[in-house]
Amino acid sequence: MRLKRLLYLVGLLMCCSCGDMLDVEPEIAVTYTNYFQNEQDVHKTYIDMYAKIREVYFQYQLQPHHKMGLVYDQCNEYYSYANELKSLSVEAFKKVAGTSWILHYNVIFQSNLILDNLYRVQDLPKDRENFYKGHCYFAKGLMYYEIARRWGNAPITRDAKSIDPLGRSDAKVVLDTALSNALRAFDLLKNYDEAVDYNGQKLKKYYAHKGAAAALLANIYAWKGGLFNDSDAYEEAEKYCTLIIENKVGIYKMVDTPEEVCSVVMDRMSSESVFELLNSSIDFGFTTGRFSPGINFHIGANYGYGGYPLNPFGSLSNNQYENLYLIKNDRVKKIWGDEDLRRAAYFWKFDEMAEADNEVTGGYAYPYFWRKPLLDAAWVPAEMINVDGNKIFWRLAEIYLLRAEARCRANLPGAEDDLNYVRNRAHAKIYPADTDTEGLQMAIFREREREMFFDGERYYDIVRNGYYNFPGMISETFEKLSEQDVKDGALYVPIMDTEMQRNTLMRQNPYWLARW
Image (cartoon, rainbow, N blue to C red; front, side, top):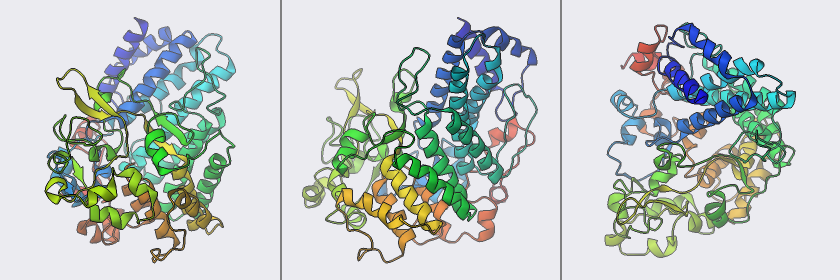
């Protein structure tokens, strides 16, 4: 009952806050004083913090940047507006989900709530205090990193009690805030196989640990290095990638084949996974949350029809009409060469189906990156409503390729070795191959595109490498962006009217203000 009362009050705070930074009566804080009396109280609030993190990533619709980075030949998702988003349509941004940062600030609020009140807990051992602090700093670091990537300039909250409106801080300050929190998390967290929770049970990889903090730091530093042309930041990214690869922050190992990536890694708790988020029906609505953009290549607009062969109730001929996103066989061949094992693993019976009757296939491939369907038995026959597996946030192959990028951008040795380590698993041609005609940096980008095709990072990889205006990367609209357009915020999600209404100090990006 005490937890329910606290969560009600927390919810009230959040509904009234995060944009205006908490428009509530301050005496509510008295309830916190009464609540945080023992570790069990803290633990329940910490569990709720992770539920809020999952809420950020388990949305029914994809956030705009995910859609803008997808490579596809046909979109059947009537509410997607993917093509319009790639054309930077104001109306498209106003209509789609994932444009508000309130869920991110809910997590930050929850983290601050714990940090602000830990001192109230009686007889909490120092190691347990550090445990909760580490997780809270990780959550804050992750959220500010996402906010910096999606919106650039953004408010930075002070604590869980402040009720004053806040203006937007510069994107670099937001990123540095993410960095400072992630560094604190790294110092406090233990390896995932060493840490235990409140009940004395070893933590799973879907809770933060030192390896996850290292991966977060590597990504923050890489983003900083790419956006601000900071070679020192790339050197730091390389350092944290190396800690993971050399098993200094936990034991991680790549599986042997691309087939195992699909059948083992994309399920749950594999040796290659560095950090993942639990996909569970415990949290309302998460069973249908598109926690990875690639899921929309595997599922139909109308549940129960598209998504073959993952969907056991689908059919060969229905995919071309039902799947939310479709990719032509010819495009698949251009991305993955004949020798690349990922082509056969990521797409069901690719060679056979590429030769099948176009009347049946439409000339489209059959994505098969996830192998377990999530079925809703409430319907007769049952309907496939999602893929069954955790959100694999970072995996070791991705870390190798991020280190390759960092080494390349910072002029450090070993970039080709990292690139070829991933290619070797796929039996792809080693660098430099006859297809590597645009230099090492582009080769690494293309390898991340191949390895992580369904993961949803492509837009951010494009922006980080400065490729947004390259032909064929996103759209003709992006190719025409000027340096001033980018400086004015064209690459970021615009600030929605709801955020303006919540916070009187909020201001739109100049690029979007001129078009709003």
